[in-house]
Length: 402
Ligand code: PLP
Image (cartoon, rainbow, N blue to C red):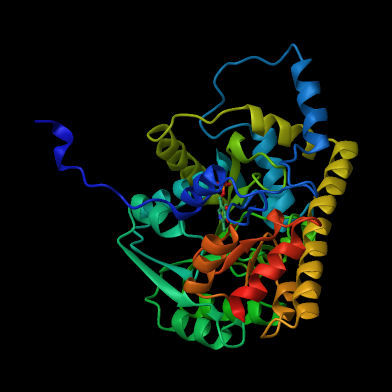
């Protein structure tokens, strides 16, 4: 008899299971389009050169030690992060109504923010896009939210945003509900609202007094331009909304395993900032006490140094350009093969992922027959494509659809 006899086996996490299957597969032409991590043209992980430079400088800096960081993290990191998100000329920052809290990557920012909202604003209902990053539901429910609801997002027939469905679902939301909005490069569809559509979304958020919680996991990584990728967040803040925004440095700095993130908080009233900070401190204190320093020091070192900042912008341009090039090549290859259907969505979509339009059976066929590992939803990570394997992937899609 064990205390654990009563514990039921939980379901596997699809993306990690897929990586395991991929690793165990000895087929020479296998391709991993599952996991969302950048790869070079040679299919290798990439440590950004600017990160190597920063790490060397930090290793040689004898003034640094291994003492605890404050509960809210490294101030030079969180302030620079919020500035990068909201813009150097942000009124919210100038008026001290905005601040950042260092977190355990983007997931940690969502978790801390959600727990704060559940605990201190008595929020119970949250909305996420259908489909969304598969972790939103679990993070918010574990943080104390009671009810997960979806708003329509993807229109399968047109392979585009279902703006009417989205607006209708948010119009029917209970007043005060929290709505998770992808800041840019929507995961998994790669399809973002236009500026006009964001304005329509903002109108409904205002009308229904919803709380916008942005998730920014791809700033700079999506278009190669930090400002462009922050447009939606800045638009909401300039319109006077109070927001939370979870920021991740996993993709744009390649710091996946350093768990480096930031929760940017924008309040409309400076008088509320001290109390909010004090409660966020207690939330984190009761969760993991204080964050690790290595990744935050790297990011702070780069964001606060003009020359390194420019180098970093070059590095994110390298990554985003490679992805854009792979989108082009995949589309061209499918069109050249005459694969049934239209393929413009591959180049219209933005960011790390593409929603191919393949259904579950077709996606499984890609894995089982062709050893091209992709999610059941038809999502592929563009980073897994290389000049060497894009032809094979296109051939495999073609065979699957004909
Ligand atoms: N949000 C979205 C939409 C993501 O795609 C990801 C990562 O894939 C995250 C948040 C969080 O990532 P991390 O916790 O690694 O920063």
